[in-house]
Length: 104
Image (tube, rainbow, N blue to C red; front, side):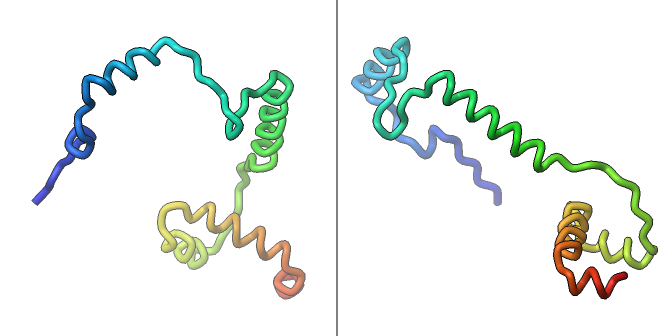
């Protein structure tokens, strides 16, 4: 049996007082507080710079790799996202001197 609930089913309806309060706030500007102060233009530029650096750091490149049929079958048996798993395995192997030495 499937039971569907909507947001309205879970939340009590607004009172007239709550509706009036929301209506009064509709056209007002947000007011920053000590937990979330307003950001200056310079601070916002810093966010963009950090985001760009992170994006460039995480940007992946496409490569062609030849694998044996058995290896490819094992990789595909990992399910959806197996290429990301292979990427992490390769990265870990390249960072581990013993694994790297044993594979050469």
